[in-house]
Amino acid sequence: MTEPKSPESFEAILASLEAEVQRLERGELPLEDALTAFERGMGLAKQGEELLAAAERKVEVLISARNGKVVIEPFEGA
Image (cartoon, rainbow, N blue to C red):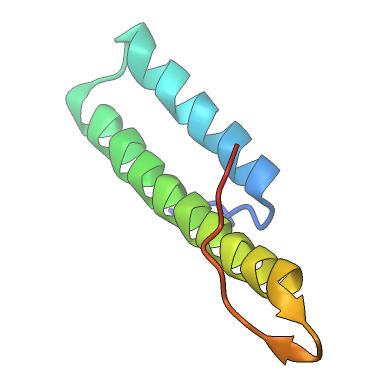
């Protein structure tokens, strides 16, 4: 069986992760399926973290360009 294509947007990753969590929380999966769902969820979480880190780096560069010189400043999320 081939694995489903990974979502590409953060929103798609989050939706897929939420779906896996709901499947696990229902507690109706056989052990092997639960392990597969958990593994997929961990992969999705990693993908989401990587996208967020890349977005954070991009924001840092965009907000820190001053006088034609780029100065990296830490991103302070809300």
